[in-house]
Image (cartoon, rainbow, N blue to C red):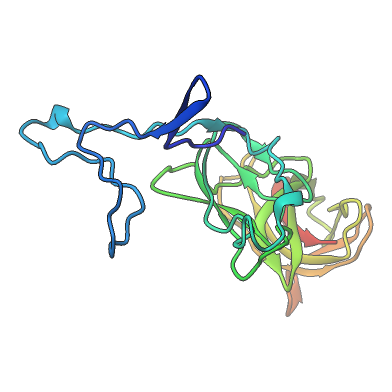
Length: 236
């Protein structure tokens, strides 16, 4: 990943001097203030006097932390608070914090209380990007932004068909699934109206054929013969 560089180091012969480029006067010290660098100008006669900070791009679906430097001295915060602009859509790399679905936009790495470990951290979306943090649930296993007691919650989209005479339906259990976290049953196809039917099942067993019973926890319900959509959320 390209690092955000505020200072340009210019070498000349055997001498080197550090320079900071700005549209205003640069002071060597700014004691007793909260900012470490003030790149603003004191000449605000027109809006064109202002400048923007352009962040280098980062692909968080490929990005990996250099953890060899996490000795509690060089990066004592274990990258907590690090900001990047992500350009890709997908999931972050395993072993570089909690695997998280990301879309293009600004993200910061939340890893409070750590000094030598990035594993508990997570990339969190920033700002008003309407797509940041959204998870697009597909017909293949999708990593959500939810975890329960440290266990990652996954989701998958599918359909099931009913006969109109039985409450038993087939909602296959994804590979590795150990427990149902939630389900939403709705309609986008078939012959009926597009309405949400339920967020409940009467029962669900791990399996692939007639392993679910439609209804609510208090009673089973026969659905009219049709095709129904569902989103299954689960843990492994």
